[in-house]
Amino acid sequence: MVEKLCRAILGVLLPPLAMFLERGCGGDFWINLILTILLWFPGVFHFFHVMGVECVKNILCLLIPPVGVFLDRGCAVEFWLSLILTILLWVPGMIYSYYLLM
Image (cartoon, rainbow, N blue to C red; front, side, top):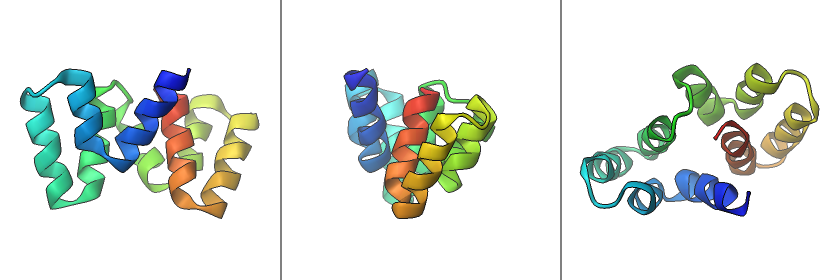
């Protein structure tokens, strides 16, 4: 559980480092590094796509975190927690949403 949370935090804040720790210095790392240098969002999207999060949920967790959680878990406690975290600060809501979907 702690490993999954650390992976979600690194995947949002430093996608190339998270990719390096997961896959080493291969092609995925270099693609992620280039995408992160161009814009931060594509690097985050690429990391979680490689980690197996579905495309639509990945985009929603990046842009509107509570909606991604709602599609995965319904209107459960996780949705409301994601909503509160996103309202307070967007990045914690995004980290929590990716944590749930990984």
